Length: 291
Image (cartoon, rainbow, N blue to C red):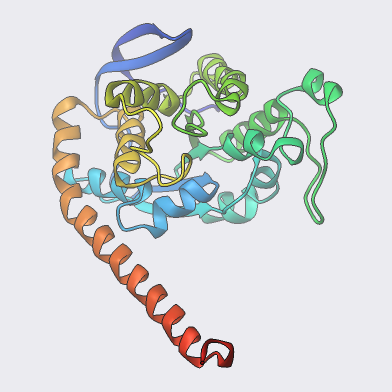
């Protein structure tokens, strides 16, 4: 039996630059309960979301705990992965762990990798040449791969939460973001058709980037794609809203994030210092550097 959709008491629709954004304005209750497991399936953004002390996965879990919910994370992000690879490892990395929930963050690499990416649908597959890297599973199409991931998870009793793919460069007019748009439209339609909760993260970043008004600068990412602390906060807020958090509950979550942000900054400084020390040691040990 398909999982019941989250109970939403009111829903607002808005068009932002041609994109339909679905926002739950008031939630009846937080859908995740103490003792439940949440799998986070994704790529390097999700891997960093767990590996970084202030990554979005860590922030989601801290936000739940700040509201009295002690859940368990199942991290399942692997750098560079696309929809075909996530489908291929779904059983091993997610379903075998018996989670109650699964968030799915997928789409950036399907587009960003160009001809090594994944076509949106059969029509796009027929219009361009796509290549497989050694050992990569059959490409399929993004629509088929994502649909299969969702259907398989639901059949296993896992409740999916879709995340629209985040930006590729903080230039919303970039060719990559334009190509990404129909992938995200597919996710919105899939969520509506299957009555699944969705965190429209691209829509959230669209608003945040416009509000920041800092053309040519990365405000939410380190490189235009991978999240810095501010970007991770945007992602975590979107996921928590999809789980049914109210404004007050989001405020409690945000207060719990401050020490994690400090920890992330300290970790980054320590890593940079270690890298510099290693480079200095290598330089000192190299005969070619000694005059």
